[in-house]
Each structure stands twice: as structure tokens, then as C-alpha cells.
Image (tube, rainbow, N blue to C red):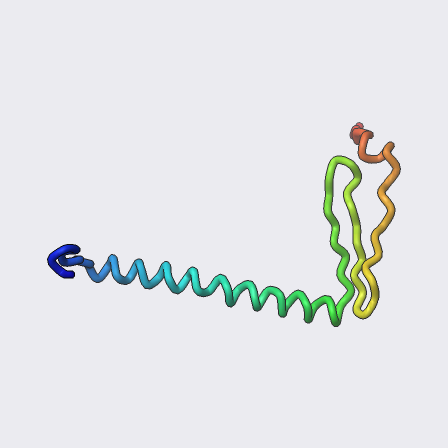
Length: 87
């Protein structure tokens, strides 16, 4: 097989870079799991308000431990459409 493929030459820097990239890719699974655990623990013990802003007034949702999420009604259309003018 060596005759068909040839000899692969790799410098120590190439090997180190490949190892670093492999480690980084493997860590994404750990980051994802840790993020899910962190989110679960925070939401189970603390109230959280998630605010999503947009030009149409946005959306606010309150997450309370042990309760269903509560969404705030959108603001009246006059607020997102108005422009604030400072004197």
C-alpha cells in the first residue's frame, strides 16, 4: 500500500495544528452539553425575561421557575412607528 500512496510527510507544526483542530471540534459537543445544563439550571432557579427587539415592537417573554412562559402583549403600533425627536 505504501507504494500506491507514497510516504506522507508531516511537520510537527502540521501535526500540532491538526490535533488542535480536532480538539476544538470535539469540544463543541461539550460546550453544547454545558450550555444546555446551564440554561436548565438558570431557568429552574431564577426568573428570566427574554427580550427580542424588532422594528415591529419586539417580544418579551417571562420565564418563571415551575411556571409556563408568559408573553407580554405587543406595544401599540404608535410606539414602533414614531420617531423620537430631541429638542
